[in-house]
Length: 488
Ligand code: FE
Ligand code: CA
View 1: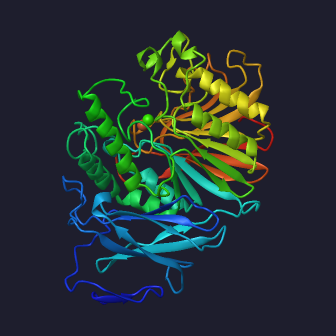
View 2: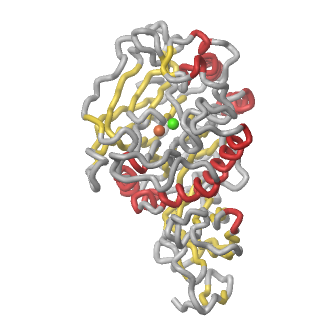
């Protein structure tokens, strides 16, 4: 390519500086939020992504970035193109809404800036409203601690060439470097906007993560580690490191700003939102972190009567009403509630439960389960991350009565790396006191769902190890969910 001029999709010649800047696409490309006629395209200009100021080696000015979308990888014909401004104030991250696309179609996209061309990404649009569309294959994953292992599971996800990828939180971890891990975080625990931006820079230099983004559009929701471990709404569970109220507020807003900058979210979108997949599926993306009450009894695993208080909420009342309203609409055959923390009851023999999960907000869970039963929702399926192991659970009308109706299904993906290599065991923990918990795996990986109108095939995928590069992935267990028959 001529370094001074190029022609892009009818936009005409763009004159570039005579001396090309350093390669700015070191963090790859991504897409997300597929709609029937558009998709969000993402990149960030960062020739030196590990710089401590969080600006990735970019100067203080704004930079034009061209994007183009084609039906094929060779970009013979451009079907949509435009220019966005990469602003210094956004760490030169860009989110372009590529419109004018056909429904239920595959596309390729790329960017140009400063005389350089980006890697090519593959993406797709959703089927039109009312259209059954084709079978949908999506993957879901969570919890990718950079230090805990290599991102082989992300590489295997890229190789699946799925229609869609859901990421359910802990895309980054906020801690400082810990000895004994396979690789180390740069810098101490992240607190400032510059720190969070550099942490995303470090994660996104990983080629396996870049491959997973470039292979399919993503739908993402953050969880605690994207900000700070176990925070709840506007409160911290601990005060380590000690921060004033205003320092904590600034840290929280820096974390969310950096998350929005680095993931392919629709500009200005709320984090809880709905994505329709024609008549086949609706994804209700939930935010169970920002609007929750603080953990009962100080958090962690407790036997805690306070967790039963009727007024407690993990979603906040506005999001709960929005969710119940969306469930009543029944536009897709399958309603997927994509969210962060363990939904089914899980109590130990001594009555302890995880106060950070829905067990710490039992009234919230009861209102939502009863809500979908009352509205006649045919196929509610909760998709969950957070706990670094894979599970398949039946959701019960009354968890104290194993004979009560099964009213839905929960599928919990394992982690990408967090918790390390794991073990081959599939013995369900606490099974005696929770007979509705039907499957468990302690391998790292992800879950694949192949969705048709009559059934969903679920494959729990595990990699043999994350402490070495290049491990194989295998299916640990498969299940079928049937239309109109809740549960595993
Ligand atoms: Fe995690
Ligand atoms: Ca988490």
